[in-house]
Length: 483
Image (cartoon, rainbow, N blue to C red; front, top):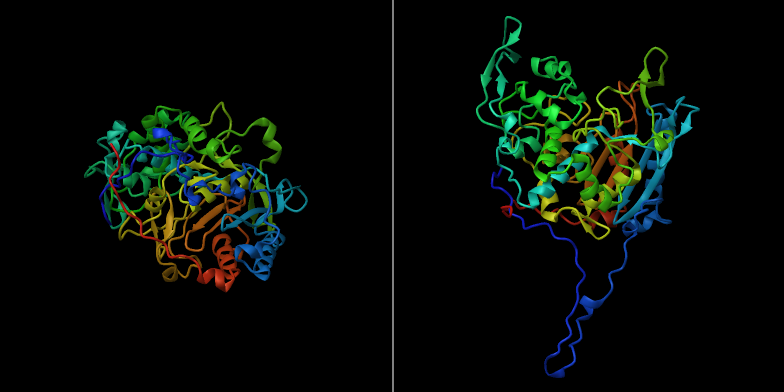
């Protein structure tokens, strides 16, 4: 894996092309070339209300009617079978929407409760992470940090962290306490963005580090400064760069955005991502006047063989009095808003005339940044290995879909949320998919594999001509940032 930092100029906004009138000698101004004067046709996504519904004839986007009908039927069956209480899905291709539907129940009784709607508000949990990554990369484009900078350059409180020692795969303990060693070096910004920095998280694991994250209530800190103080007092699990380990590092990224930009993290996101993209219902806080649209979380009750409403996990609360702005999992959003974010990613960084990041930045984020290390978690569970998958900068990437028997195009990048939400971006086939559910703590035995099943059905629904015409993904280049 190349370690050369990426070079990019300052972030540019789109500007209208104009022509100066020549005044010399009274000569008339030459006519501008037709290609430069022709008005740019508006795109559906230029409307901030987009997406509202699918196009009248989705086959014009390259899908078969039969394939989309099979996709719709599968989601309806998943609700009827109680795989999920409710689902919202958005399928985009070619710059517009092929399917936008809601199924089942948003809140209350899983069979008779309030119906799920296209504007239901959902906890997206770890689908917050790519949003945070885009924010940090905006600052990268401005030359304010580099990928191989030590994180301690921007967060000196993380200097001199200790690391667990292991023997036979288990932490070495002495007198009930872990035996610690000095870490070999500080983690780099690249490692902070690729979960190879060695931090714990507290969402699972019985090792001393993850236990300390839970005991210290790191994710329930009152603000990002308090969170960092707690993290600085907890050792690393692994030496930086030696293992891929799902971690608190994206919450650290939120702190870094705040520290480098000089803006409160949530204010930065609103000004630089949410407002430009028209993501007006994405926030760390749930306003009281929107509470009726907030979905419940469900779980599978083995005793009754049925879904039931379960308690919200304790690591997010969505109220102004107690909410830390968690870059790793704190946002609520809607299908509309995350579809706009996804279309921006598919457009290589732009939407509705706003450039959020450059195309080179999206390409950089969606390439392998962990070398030969293995990715073992998709944001919802720990796994021993995921063949054909690597990790970029706040995205997982299908580098060899066939190796893992995955249905996606090569180079598809994705992430998930703890309550079952998914999204994926397939640049080769010009497709994005957003699937929102609220399911935690277990599912019905044999339940739908939300990402893989939807991916297979969507790609099966492509017309042969559309699939054959899909362009090959261009290799990403890593350049040096401006200073």
